[in-house]
Amino acid sequence: MQRLTRDQIAARVARDIPEGAYVNLGIGLPTMVTKHLPAGLDIFLHSENGLLGMGPPPAPGQEDEDLINAGKQPVTLLPGGAYFHHADSFAMMRGGHLDICVLGAFQVSARGDLANWHTGAPDAIPAVGGAMDLAIGAKRVFVMMEHLTKDGASKIVAECTYPLTGVGCVSRIYTDLAVIDVTARGMVVREMVEGLGLDELQRMTGVPLAYEAL
Image (tube, rainbow, N blue to C red; front, side, top):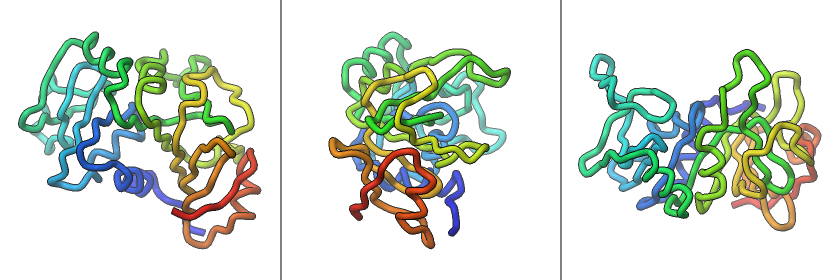
């Protein structure tokens, strides 16, 4: 069994973003999706600090310290892109104007509850930021994460034990082992990495799984 790298997970997410979509890529792992979006497609990347129409990361030495995304990473702006106040940016998020948001997660529950922030560890992010607004405002929420914690526990769980970011908001989960949809009838596996069977995936997952290929 060959697990996907983080870069390969990002590439897999990029395949599911259609032309014409308005998309927010969350802080951390989701920002890697940017470099895998096909050139020439009109996909409009949004950032909660007040950007719409972000392009790929700048070439080394071409960074503009005043042009950053919500994760404080340098970005570029495509022709026709726009800057605006972060209050307007949050209005876009809360108003249902984003087609997809891609977020990292500590846990996703069987119902699609999302937990992706905490403040209890020394290296923890300080606050939830815009994740709650994205989780309830975007039409679809994609989650990118490793399937297991460093201790080997499933990040897909019956009930989240971390503070919730959103309730029943996750549409699809992309891990280093599988692509899994959250449906009204439970978790449905759509793809698995080569060499992995459903029984083995089930043993590593904290909730019942069904299989239905895309």
